Length: 457
Image (tube, rainbow, N blue to C red):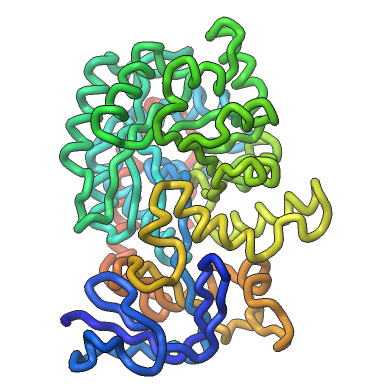
């Protein structure tokens, strides 16, 4: 068996159903999957040589999963500050997204993927962009990250730039074509999703077409919903008094594999309606705080049996893509609402690993360290001062409340080392930054926005 790797001597945090922690345990990998644990290689591979990676004194756990991302907004970091959601979209984000081309989308997504990998994220669900969508998808394939992604679909809406308001039939045909091209690309690392942005930028015909494509191809549907109260008020005004969940039920979207970003204003009635369906929520606490959206009822959502993941959202509304920050915020915000420990370290980690993987449809492949699962693995150094702890401390609490991107030592996706000793192995970060600088200048010029004086540090 070729390509075997032995991660030797680390403390393995499985994040499986029993949350087992295995001190000083080797992990054996081959053909992109986890073969086994222990001092000796699995019997089927006893004659194979393995590359040994010494991880003694480190924590070995599943790679982090972020269920809602906008890598197409990575170039916009810091360009849409101090705005609530709808003004943020109309005044800055939509004009900038409309100015994307394939090249700017590619390099912006590469920059975002590099940030994700360096901070321990091995899998994302990205809602995509309109113009330049193919460039973004190519970047996801080339970057080495695992992704569920698609083209962002919009065909109508107040203040929507013409370049984003595509003809309904055209945008549906385009996403179907992209899905056929990219679903399963990158040796299976990329899975396609249908990504209508939200109700305020999609006609009834668009949502009907999305439902039909989901039924025809089995692709999931990922969108934004119930992010801010003023958004829902506009939805009610537009859809004859119905809120988002009521509209999605009538449109047949709730019958699909449906994944909602934010869900800040989900209530008991909503949760009763979606109970038992293929429905998940991705919590984005950093973005929700920055845009003044509110605090999602994570405990109630989980109590209803709905899987919850976490996501940084995008660099234009967060402003970083660090999953450690998001899972920590998720736990601390629930403590503010419900008391200390309401969402403990283990549960917070599950949002970014096993449960987060389930939320984006990959729970059988990733999210926990188990024999047969994909070898998407994160190794954290215990040499950092913030990673010192008393021997009685729970390691799940240590990671959830103390770890950060600075602790990341190695990152593997499908058994391939994407980050080794804190450095990217396949991607040239300096080149990505150079190309991103060049593309941003041209993109801002195409947008026609006056963003003020430029500063170069």
